[in-house]
Amino acid sequence: MISQAIILVNGHVLMVRQYVARGEIVWNFPDGQIDPGESPQQACMREVFEETGYTVQPDQILFSNERKYTFLATIVNGHLVVDHSLEENADILEAAWIPLTRRELFDTYTAPLLDLALHTRTSK
Image (cartoon, rainbow, N blue to C red):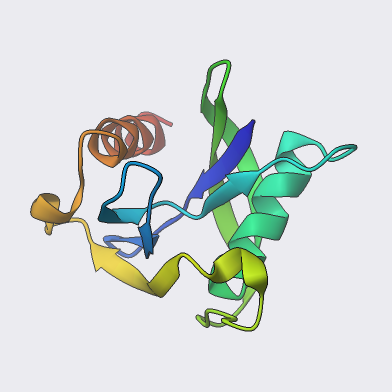
């Protein structure tokens, strides 16, 4: 199981550019495997911190299925940095705040979740 976070701030979304299992380099939401004994929320917080340097609070479950949990999350503190000394980050090339207007960077996996996040956030 995977846990991931969508973090929206000032017209940008936090993403990592990484190699994925399907053999491509893509922009993806910070995510990773849920470790044994870890809740999806704990995994979300750990993965975002490992991949981006931010401590986050998962605010709401946005989507879940048999493979993945997706949370809307808020930054609590930290600053943008990828710790390349972590073996878990070997597939990550960079982390960045991507403008929501850069729709060409969102693929068939990320675009629908981003749209759901934007719709959920504006309908509150």
